[in-house]
Amino acid sequence: MASSQRTADLSGVRMRDPVALWYPIAAANDVPFRHIFHGQLLGRELAVWRADDGYINVWENRCLHRGSRLSIGINDGRELKCQYHGWRYANRTAGCTYIPAHPADAPARTIRNRTFPPEERYGLVWSSLNATAELLAVSALDQGPFLPLRGIAVNAPAAHVVELLRKYHFQPIGASGSDAAETMLEDADERMIVLRSRQNGAQTVGAFFVQPLDSRRCVMRGVLKGAAQGAERIAVLRHHNERLSKLRDAAEHRTELEPPPPATETVYEHVAPELAEMPEPTASARKAEIRVQIARKWAAADGIAGFELRSLSGLLPSFQPGAHIDVHLPNGQIRQYSLINGPGESDSYVIGVKREALSRGGS
Image 1 (cartoon, one colour):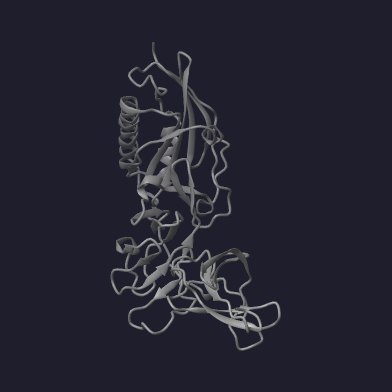
Image 2 (image 1 turned 90 degrees about the vertical axis):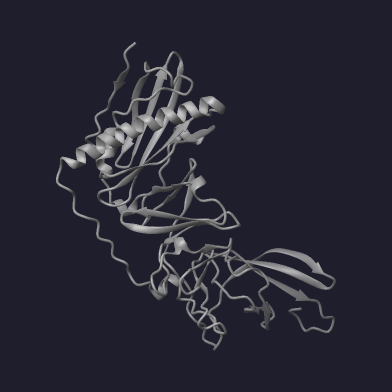
């Protein structure tokens, strides 16, 4: 049986500002614990790393000191350490926590790397340079298992690859040894193609995404709806690897015959103080106030209670070991407590409070 394919008219696809869209920047298994993945999107280099609490950080891939790549640094699970001069940056906030040249001084809260929003979906890590659009969703992949494919780098503009993916033909899971399936185009935009393959009652939905590295290079990333194990899984992965590799060759051949597009020019802006997202200073000489709630209280030791404080909005400022906070009590008093959690745990502050029978409140 000869293979067939139906296409749809996509001439009306609306082209949006690329920096406003979400793109896959890595596979989830590219970002294991204690590793730093060197990603790229629309000309920007990204340092992508998973902290020990599971949070995936997507930062601009440069140290604020001398511009060294953070992707060649050290991920200790809570912080990234630059290999050049040892500056450290905290999980979640990307705030600088330690400068070796000034070991006794806490870095200013405005020393904070540029961050980009992270999301993990369909076995891929997604981000956006200026997320004003919704995170891309493929309803066919939302329920049940899915199988991510190997990413394939292509030396061709993303638009060329998206155009060729509209005509991509593949077999459903369980029938990869044949070539008789009917492939139908179900959805598409400027960075995604969704196809459905059918043969003899079997069908598989495949979503194929294009990650633009710059104006001349991109990465194809695919996800299939369904599960495959053992030899069948290997056969499915080999099937798509061979066909997507041929599509890559076709895109690169076409690119060689056309004038190259203008090179992507990346402008690295200065990190502005307002990125620290700190509230305005108070009228008193004390630091700015941060509203928190008590998320947890427990008996840390005999006569000592532990308190976990979480911000009511946003992330908490990064801190150094031994730093303390002023706790403003309902009776108007202020007490100081040292932070006892790790400096990279910027989603909460943890303090220990000893009970004093003669205290006027706050212990």
